[in-house]
Amino acid sequence: MRLLVTGASGFLGRNFLLSLDPSWTVDAVYSKANNFPEFLARFGLQHVSPHRCDLSDAEQVRALADVLPKRFDTILYLAADPAPVASKDDPVVESMSGPIGFTTLLSSVHSDRLVYLSSGAVYEGLRGEVGPQLSVAPSLPYAVSKLACEACLRSFRDTGYLGGYVALRLFAAYGRFEAPRRLSTRLVRWAADGAHDAFEIHGDGENLIDMMYVSDAVRGIKKVITSEVSDEVVDFATGKPLSINDFVQRSAQILGVPGAPVRHVGEAAGYQEFIASSRRMKELFDFRPEVPLEQGLLELKENLITADNSQ
Image (cartoon, rainbow, N blue to C red; front, side, top):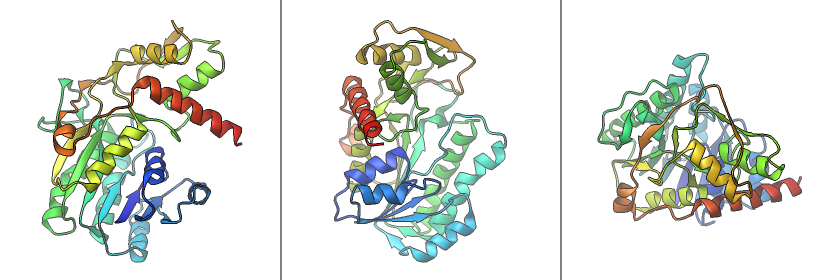
């Protein structure tokens, strides 16, 4: 398997690379993570070749294409804005930078298969159960960017740049290597520090969150890569969301802080009132998330302790 992975230095990319058989030859694209080559060396990932490139810069993308093979078995496109729900000073730039890099890369490097990590954020503004059969019209720049890239997929397939594609609309994932600002890591750190202050939640906490543990997310992506299913857009979620308030209370109890004190401040950057179904992932790829919140949070806690002790 010859694989190209973009966004390889992100938390999902790092977990994915660690899960691969060394017989897979991987070209891994990253942008700002200066420690990414050191990460590959530390974990003995000699079968992974790092390539630094800002995918929002068309010239850098063309230069990257010059040093890559002209065709891959699979491209796994994980690259994304690291803060998708944050408001941007220039929404036009934010909405266009993702599609520019995406289309420039696919115009220069061909693949028998593309697995594109889209986002459940494309359902912004909807309520209740959602799915790819619904019309969507998000306004969040990140979601607009993801939807624009999805819209390009059929054209790239029809013109022969891609043999086929699957777009996975991921709702949320958590686990090892995630950013310190992420809700699950903040909860683990807060509990480990003694939970002396109330845990801070932005907004009223009644918006929904559907959290999949990273090992499940990686397993699902690998099932998609190795399947023969093609030309599909699929929701990638547990299908069992919780309100932020409930997620915090359940997590706090798991972490030894029952009846956790919380403080609601400001407004939520994004407000989810929609629910995904995991049925289509089960039907197409025989995949269903298996890791319960209890296991995932405690594994994340152990990973954070290990990382702290190694510094």
